[in-house]
Image 1 (cartoon, rainbow, N blue to C red):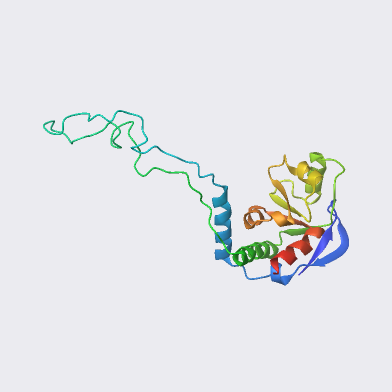
Image 2 (cartoon, rainbow, N blue to C red):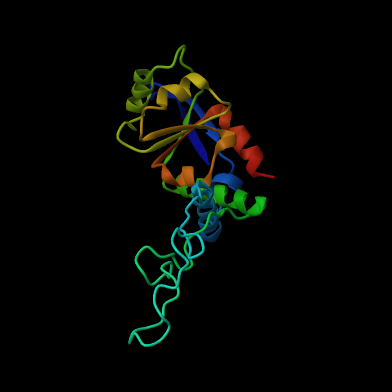
Length: 209
């Protein structure tokens, strides 16, 4: 599919680029997308939760009352989970939520996400640009020129660009990543995908393996 190339002022440069059908026009695999997003979100979890169980609660180990003759249930410890201040039964323990996915499945998921965005016509191709110094106002002007100031957007750079990244860092609705940092979650989480020209070759090369 052909997409026109815009400059950072939002004007048509008169050039067009051909987006690879093998990356931007496949039949999306919803299950692959689900698994990749699930893995991404799982990896964000710290897994440092912890509750004290019966053996870890501070307290006396003395038998709190005699075994028989009280008319109530027997009880051997104040740390019994049934009592206030007692241990937690099967409480959470520190653990890792990460799990493994094959590289081929993750590539399929990213291609599916790109194809979804292309089908919705939510992909913009922008010629490469840079700022002399980090400047949030300059980045906001780019967003206004592309009519994205009130939309969630993801800018994909060919290589890491510190000035562009720092210019966007204070804006909650916009995110800037390099083509090697792309994730299925980031693609789907944005309303509009802005691909710089230098990123296209890298994306298609990585996802066509």
